[in-house]
Structures are given as C-alpha cells and as structure tokens.
Image (cartoon, rainbow over all chains, first blue to last red; front, top):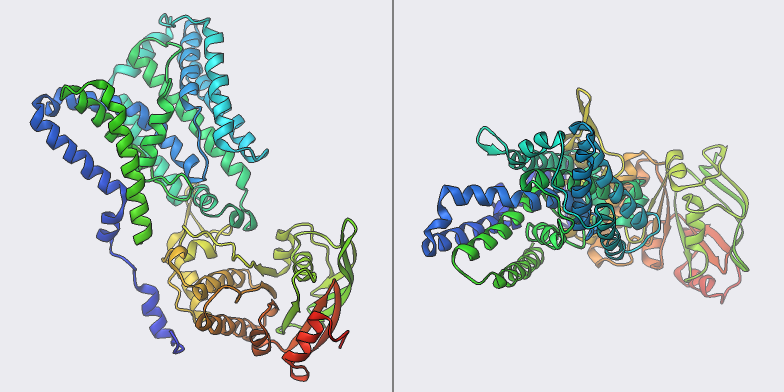
Length: 334
Length: 246
C-alpha cells in the first residue's frame, strides 16, 4: 500500500476478482433457500410419500405462482427501500373489476389492459405519495390497503363475481390452461423473473433502483431522477398485481371480494426470504421466486404431513426470522 | 486569466449573513485551502460555487464567462465537480458503478440499450490507474478503505474532465496512512491541470498540498495568502480571530 505502485502491477490488481463465481453462489441467500427447499422436500417425502408424487409437484408449481408474480414485482420496490402492503387489496380490486369488466361484455384484450392499468394506477398513487410528499411507504400503503379493499366491496356490493360472459371463456382457458405441459401462470412467472432480472442488472433503471436503495441522497446528487424511478417501481408492482389477478381469477373461476386478503404478507415474506433487504439496495427476482416456492412448500408439506394447519404461520414466521438472520450473518462476514 | 473569479459574493439566510462580500480568484491547476471554524461560511461558499443554491448578491466568473448556477448539474456541465464530505457513494454498488452513477455508458443492440458493464469497468480502471490508486473496479464500495472511497469519488470528477474540483473535508474521517493517499490523489489532479479548492480543518494537510490558503471568519474572507509566506500558527490565529486579518 505504501509503495507507489507502477502501472503494470496496478493492472494485475484491477484484474483480481475478489471472489470466485462458485464462492459468490455459495454466499448468496438464494442458494441457501434452494438448499432449504430441497431438505424440506426430502424430509417430508420420507414422512409423507404423497409429497413427491408428480400430481403434488404440479400442485405446488401451480400454487406458488400467484405469490411469486407479485413478489417479483415487489422486489424493485423493496430494493429502493420502499414497501407496499396494499398489494393484497389491489389483487382483490383488480380481480373483481376483471370479473365485472368481462361480465359487461368488453373484449378480453380490453379487459386485460384495463385491469393492468387499474393496478398501475393504484401503484402510481402509492409511489407519488411516497416520493413527492415524502410520506413513509408503510403508512401510505397501509392507508391504501384499507381504501382499496373497501372500494372492492363498494364496486361488487359484496357479491361474488362468477358470471364472466363471453370473455370468460378466454379468461378461464388462460387461467387453467398450459403450454408444452407447463401451466400458463408458471410461464408468466418464468418470463417475468427473467425480464425483471434483466431490467435490474442490465438497464439504467435497474442501476438506479439499486443506487436509490444504497444511498438515496447520493443518487439524487448524481442527477438520478429518484422520485420518478420510485414511482415506476410501485406502478410496475401494481401492474404485475393486476396480471396476477387475471391468472388467479381465471384459475379459480370466480372473484370474491376477499381475494388477496393477507396475501401482502406472503408476498413480502417471499421477497425477504429470497434475499431482498428491507433497508434497500439488495434483491433479485430469482430470490423472490424461490422465496415463494419455499412458502408454498411449507404450506403443502405441513398439510400432507398431517400437521394441524394452524401451525403454518409458525413455520413461515420461523423461516422469515431465519432468512433475516442468514442475511445478517452473510453481510457481517462479507 | 483566472479559472474562477468571485466578486463580492454574499449569501443571507433570513437575518443571518452566512457569507459576506467575498472576492477571490482561483488560477487553473492551483490547489487552494479554504479554512475556517465551524459556521464560518465555508460550506455555504462552496455550495454556491457548486450550484446548490444561488448567491444573494455578487458575481461569479468561471472560465471567462459570467455564470449563474441554478442547480448542481449546471455547475457540473460548466466543469465544476464537488466531492462531498460524506462522499455521496452507494455502498452496495461496485466502484465502477459508482464512478459512472448517473452517467452510465450504454451499449445499443437494435432499439434496446444496455449498461455496458465491461466498458465502464475498463474506463474506471483507467481512471484509477491515472490516480495510481489500488482500487478495483469490480469491488463493492462497502468493503473499501477510506482512501479507496476517496479515489472512487475523485475518479467521478475525472470522468467529466472537470476544471475545478471542490473537496469538502476529504481527510476528516480516515486513517493517517489513508490521508497520505488522499493528498497524493489531490496532487495528481493538479498534475492534470485541475484546480482544487480543499476545505479542511487539518492544518498539516492544507500546508502539505496547498499553494494558497484562504481563511473565512464569520462569513468574511480574512486572509488569502501563499502558504509559503504563512504558518500554521498564523492561520490558527486568523481562524479563531486572535489575528484580525492578513
């Protein structure tokens, strides 16, 4: 350090990679959650052989998708240091509006577009209040959670929507159909995860999302449009929630106004278990997906192992705490 | 011709006169120390030069043109960069990402634009080589020493080819050995023809690199003299007011 290094030995310093690729994988939260999923799978497979049947696997792969889609959308929000606890309510509102729009006879494409826009609109309001009025994201979206849920009851007048009219056939086919043996919704998860990860690591937007979570003040001083980027993350999450509603209602065949109630906590849990840091700056869409898989595997495994379902929350809760500890452990060692 | 010329610059915040009637010149490639006690107006003065807020009165001439900066990006475009005291770096990003923050190099493939990670790493490595700093472009800033962090912040200013760099207490919070590293970085900027205004409380640092020293006291410029004709004792007396002016 003291000697003044010449250019050639500086080059050798620059080319040093601090850690190997394998080391990076071993250090990632995602890797350890994958390990956890495999261990749980193996243990439960021994206790309840039904767990490992292809029918049950297909079941899990279908069920985790709805949380995963929203968790992928939640990832950039959390990476900027924000949070959105209104997504469960937004899922409910977009779900029932989807049903009502279909029932009103609009073409399916128009319905889909409207539902995505409604979701994005809720996100834009959240994001604008957080960014421009500098209100804490937790409180803003807590308010929105109540407001949007109440609007869901208002527009449906507390009725279940199950008659979807002509567009309904397309909706149900989309929700329960599959392509090349893979459920449509799983395709949606795969495509969303890949696109989101690409956005996060290869575009200016992704770089800014990360920078804002790392040091918002520095980002602002560097001339990054911090407020607009933040609003965009909430809007994107809203739109992805709308997309989730399309697959979920298409799969269930009905939209109740309790749709998505409590789901925000599962979505946030999945995102955090997958390695996103609530203080901002870190997260991957793959982490969000694997976190969602873990939660569904726990739910499914407990059910098949004959454990009283009241225990589910205990296990999910323990895994959230475990994930946070794991993250802490990794960041202090790194 | 002077690089920067301040003529009778004042700034009030309500009834408080933070900076009053300050005039001085900065020559190209010159390292000038700006000293003063807490609240003497150093930060206010520097923030006006950097475009964080306008002066209440007075004129500023930069590079031969009368300028008025409404926001930091105006000053940056003119060729003035500021290295903030807290360095304004993102701990979670790599050195290269920090150097290029807000000025990313993009690569187009058809209608799409991607971050050109490789080009940014290479360019960052060039800048670190120029600064002779052992800072690896791939490394995350969080794990860096204070000196390396300074190198990253200073490399940012080199990216834009700034003519004037304002440095706010760059040696305040780092170890003795790293201080030497940072002072060496400042001298490298000078070698490149960059003028530096160094705000510092640390007498040895200022006398170590600065050719000229200016002292602010209660918003007034009470001294502006060559370091070779002054002494730490005299500057201390000027800062605390034991000596009225020099």
